[in-house]
Length: 226
Length: 401
Image 1 (cartoon, rainbow over the protein chains, first blue to last red):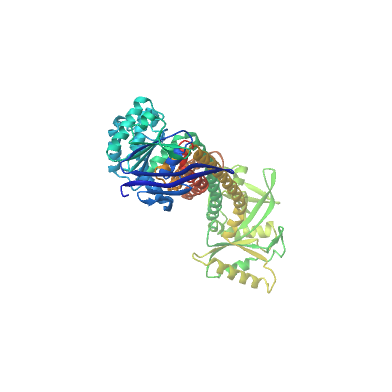
Image 2: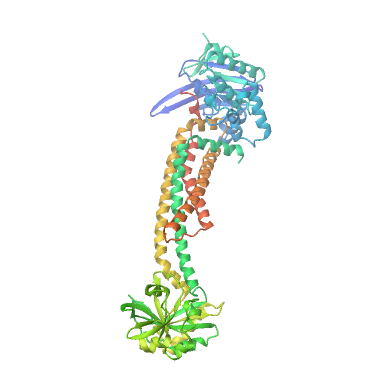
């Protein structure tokens, strides 16, 4: 129990549009241990993104429980949730979501704006991360001057700047060519080896194979692989 | 606020240069107008005060005029009761430094065959001192002229100029049906409001009373008080003495008016005050309009940047962080535009002073005014877009259901 990073118990999410209710998640049960690498696959509309939003504390379930590091997150205030997102969780997205007017370095430093004071050490750490991801020459480049693979690596550096325990990846290779995809997956695998827990949503079975476990989400529930 | 935060929001602002240009322009224009109008209003007031000070009517001075309060310009009491004996009595008061009695009227004056109705003042030699005035040429009326009811005249600068400045001394001017010798010309004084001080002729008081107006009373007296005199107490005392001397008791109204410098300032600035209040209101409205423009552009910008705001929230920004981000942005815009607006108003004031008779008054007050108004407007009208930004749903970052 103690090595569980997160646990979902009968998690449900219903959207209401006008009078029609859409039940997107229909009772999800999931345990993810520290250091795990889980890939979630499934058809479009199966609830993958909704699940990822809830796991990333960007959305709340309609019912059921979500324990993150042992704490029931529905009990937490918006401020505490923001703090958890800032400190414990890193995000990477299919569309990278870098701030277009900021340099690579400033993008990596962005989460620090919402934490404690920024000091020289932080900037050193950000530079070291970019260097580790092979971007030492692109530190002052704007996103538009970077290739897709480079942009995603900046986004990974940004996700890692606060040393999170959980990395959430939404189709991280969806906008990349196969060479860049391979590079990004190598990085994620390496980070997982170092102990980072990763949950990744993807369409691509080849990409999903790099994870330790694959789960299929269909019509709001996990199904057994056939 | 760390420097990184400022850098973050200034870079965001500069990312959309057209947007920030429009916001700033709308603010700058209304602030320029506001500052200029404020400065003009201030200077109108100062001009009057300067003129009064120049006339030795700045402080410690009173003007007593014959005739009581007026209804539609017509005196409701007798106006022939103020006498030189009254002036003598006032001179005995310990707080009176100097008195300068005068009488005045419009009479026909002719020189070299041209006749004109002009204002002629009968005054004593002390008049120059009492009004802080000097001769430009020749000499002023002396005690002997007063004693002998002499037919001499001193010209105001504008009249002398009209008659031909240089060769006037010793010439004869006809006032009504008698000839007067020009003995001097006064230096230029300008005007008090619309009253032209330099379009007058001065003759000895006795000459004016006996030869020109045929009166045994005077039209007024200027009283200079000892420094540090309590004006209100002095007015009260003088009123008591004059009422007594004029035999006024009970509810009988005063047959004289005591004018203080404050009253003159108030009268001369009343119209300009109304006007500047009106203009000020208009420029404040224009400021509100720029506020609405700011709100509009900021809201559009928040909608456009919804993705980035959602990203900030996903990375750990609280509602507080997002609101702070936009309010600081507003503050930055406000201070920059406030400063530029102030500089622009200085330029406009300089041009106004160059091209028109207006003399806008420079003051740090307008600088503060500029910054305060732009800050209040900007921050107030950015509240709505800032709140809107803080409520963006971060779930939009991940593609649909």
